[in-house]
Structure formats: C-alpha cells, structure tokens
Length: 346
Ligand SMILES: Cc1cc2nc3c(=O)[nH]c(=O)nc-3n(C[C@H](O)[C@H](O)[C@H](O)COP(=O)(O)O)c2cc1C
Image 1 (cartoon, rainbow, N blue to C red):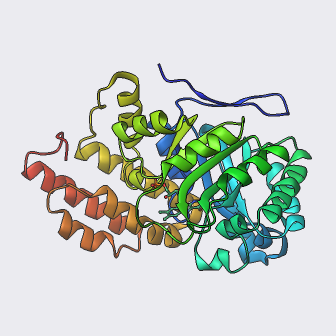
Image 2: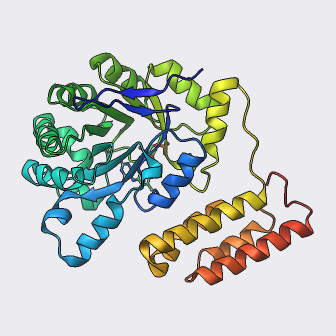
C-alpha cells in the first residue's frame, strides 16, 4: 500500500496527496484543464504554472488577466498549490495575500526556475545563491498567506552550481520560517536540464528537515518512481516532462508502485478523446486563439506512437482553430481504423 503524502499545516487541515505521486508545475503546459486530466488519471496533487508577484501587484489590465488565468484552479483539482515567484519580500507578501484569498490548498514559491526572464529579476533559482534573501522571501510569503490561513511550500533546485549546493540550507531556513513542505529538483541552475538529477541531494534535504520533502527529477515510469522513493526517503515523487502529452502515466506509475504491474495503456480512441477534451477545456479557459497555440505541442505529444504520426504532427504543429484540430483527430481515427489499431495500444 502506498502511504499518502500528508502535509500538516498550522491552520488545522492537513494537506493529503493520495497517492503520493504528483504533477510538477510546468509553465506553458500545466494549465488547469491539463492538471485536472492528470488528477483524473491518478496524480495525487498538482501545482499551477508560475505566476509573477510583480505582475500581480504592478501589472496593467492585460497582465492582470493573464495572471488570473495562470492562478486559476478548480475544486476538482484539490489539493492544488498556486506557484508564485519574485525577488522582493514585500511584493511576495502582497501577492501571497491576494492569491490566498482564492483559497488554494497551498502557495508554492518558485526557487528553481532558471530561465533568463525570471533570473534577471533575481528570482527563481538565483535565490539559492543568497539563502538569507530566500529566507526573507519565504517568511514574507508565509506572513501574507497567513492572513487567509493558506500554508506555504517551496520548490527549489539543488543550488546555483556544483560549488554552491544550498538546497539543504534553504530547506532548513524555509522550515524555520514556517514553510510546510519543500520540493527538490536536484539539478543546479547552471545545469538547466542537462545531465541527470543528483538524487543524493534530495536525501540530504530529507535529513536536514522534518517537514515533508517531495522529490522531483527524471522520474519517467513506475521503476524510476520506486527507485526515487527508495534512494531518497522522500515523501512523494513529482513528475514533470514524462507526463507531457501523457496524463495516463500517473495510472501506470501508481499501479506499478501498488502492485508491481503497469496499468493498461490507453488505445488511440481514448488518447484522442482525451486530447479533444483537453483542447476544448483550454479554449474555454484561455480563448480559442491562445489555447490553440498552446495546444500545438500537446497535440503533437498526444499523437506520438499513432500511425502516420509524423504526417499528423506536421499539421498539428500549425493548428489555429479548434475546428482544424478536430478535423485532424477525425482523420487520425480513420487512419487508425484502416490499420485496425483503434483499440490497441499505440
Ligand atoms: C517546460 C517546462 C516548464 C517548467 N516550468 C516550471 C515552473 O513553472 N515552475 C517550476 O517550479 N518548475 C518548472 N519546471 C521544472 C519542473 O517542475 C521539474 O522540476 C523538472 O522538469 C524536473 O522534473 P522532470 O525530470 O520530471 O521533468 C518546468 C519544466 C519544464 C520542462
């Protein structure tokens, strides 16, 4: 039996992620409809895409609309954390208070993102170079969120580079100022996504704190999830890239962890039905134009392994309307039927 992730909070209710296999935040990918899909296929909890604290506080009308969309979550998703980033404690305090009014299960602070736009303003993984500032930011966020009794978690990388592995120290400081859980993706900022994540850092963080630790990095299937639990002692595993276009992965990983057997892979019909639902819901949330731009990569990922997928992908990458997308899926179904592969694992 899998032990659910339990995150005690100072406000009464414990956050319970059951099963302890959760979906990673991924900007441009893990919007609300996709998170809901992953939850339906077995993810125990999800994190929103990252939201800028300064855009929330100082942004004009257009960026306010965008941040509201990014921070939106539905009841069906719970437990869910909304992730914010910033380098100014006061701005983080204000942003946390605003988000906390919408009552997510947690507010998560991003200390892992290394993209230039975020690092340039001193946020994301840059904070791992300055543990005191990281601590001040966490303390301010906890203070802002406390106004509406919402707990705070932190997601971090291992450190800045090989000579600056600060995750254990930052996790300890986070715990000291009231964070209720931490997630560790143990690559350095300098590494970006190259090489393999160093799971020994997750173990070191686990040894440094008593709050729950979620491990993240290179979990791609049941055996790798099991290995991460065993090698790090983490309380939950978080999956990112392997779930792109593959919300079904969660059923597989959970089934493997529970019984050693993979769940049955979805056939082409189920994959396409899922992809259609995803696109329609995303259009409802973000409007057809933006949704279809975002959907291009998802659709290409969903089509992986289907018959004539290279030809399909070439068109899926250029869709601009829902009708176009639906027509391509109709055709994909016809192709699969021609190959007698409708029900089969693709
Ligand atoms: C396209 C993309 C976007 C990401 N966006 C975020 C983000 O908004 N916030 C965050 O904390 N991590 C973000 N990450 C990092 C993931 O949450 C995760 O830590 C990382 O991909 C390692 O896990 P994996 O090996 O399972 O993919 C992103 C990763 C990718 C590939």
